[in-house]
Image 1 (cartoon, rainbow over the protein chains, first blue to last red):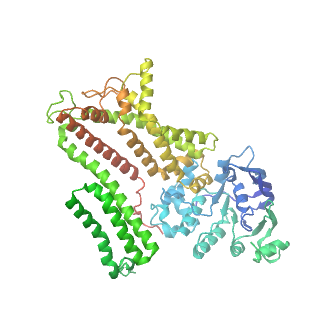
Image 2: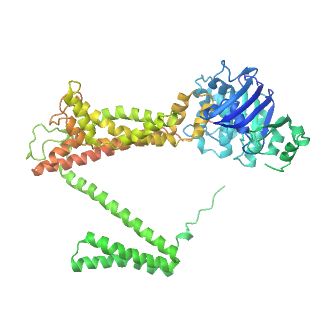
Image 3: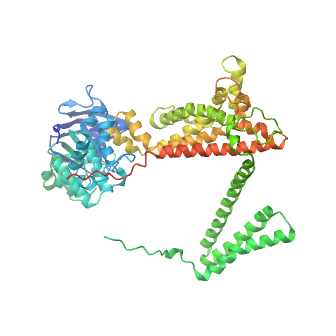
Length: 261
Length: 359
């Protein structure tokens, strides 16, 4: 394995988000320490996916989007003058809810697409492809058909290919937006194992609706909630153990025990 | 592991034996009735088809449908009959045009009809001499220049319309749609007025291309826009999330995904202009010799060749016009085939790797 960049600490400070005139998030302050897995949980529409997208500046692609506050990557503001969106996204990778491999490319080209798209040199293509696919634990399934079209894979394999594609960029932080919501239990388990292995080399933030998944993979958990007609925000943030077994806030307790949401 | 051979049974296709005679009767009786009527009374077969065959077929089929399934059977049967009849009607129209062009055109076609020009040909010259070689070259040059200008412009417009957030986008789209309603003769007149108003432009193949560009542009732009719209936004986000600048996301991800749609845009654009006659008559003098210079002098094209020979009163000349029409069809078919083959070559890369699995 070639030398990998180290994980970084990511933190948000007073992040508020608007779509047009409507505020959807209010003053989110969270810290994602290096090499830790953080789960963002909460009912649909509470702004957790939106928050995730502010962390690698994908949020700004929506025309009506607005934002205040700062996001720090190892102390530097990613919305500051020293950063641009492209640099941020190279350092902070993202896996989407729906698998989205590039349909016109082979499996191999999908892995190399990140480097090509960001205009960087590809050193040893063969090695990079194998390493990335191994880290996403899909190598054994696809090693004999690397030149096949990526869309010939099953949904679960496509999602792991997308993870591998992000890993080929060697990100410092990996954001995952409900990566298992469209997958069967077997694929879900394999991706969870992958997440645990990856946390040794990067910081991971994962949005999930699955309480068991949050408990299995994460070190710390943030509970988001949007009361009727108010912007969403963090109700409680702490070690996963504490959020699920001894939450301080009554609403957190109700949510993790399935009383609403 | 082997799979059991799939039994070739499709239970839903099994004919209901009780109804089979009703269906046969409903299909055959109207045809017999119409045929008998035509033979006995001698009315026009086309008229009989519309006035007798279609209504009786509709009534009978509806009756069978009604007796089998009640009201929903009636609706189904009527719809099936109407659909088949109207499809057949359109097919007959198209095929009869094709048939005339093929049979009439074939009489004029020979090797020298493709390879020779028309220099020593008069209205009564036998079809053993002369051909449309010069007009094929002229058409390809004029349409070629049009395509080289209009396709990049049209695709650029489509890119602008799909990728930008600009507010005047809708204005651009409306104007493009309005432009697609532009009568071709007006486009020709516009160029003609430039030609007559000064020394900028003379009648030439290039002037003809200029007149065709406004006709091809809106077609290409609109079809290309639809093709680009079909590319899921997910793919663009995936590319941007990997740190791609907008232009690389576009060229490496969106454009390849829209490739076959963009080729359709090119083809529909070609089809729009390759048979255009009016603008060419106004902006280009035709001639009988071969010209390779689109920027100066007269040049023949297939549509103007057809136009000038069709109005002749001599039989061999009219035959030449039919021959040229067939050649035009062949040229279009070749161009379409070529574009499809070129467009497909890259996306068919699905061969499995032969590389040995490394453990």
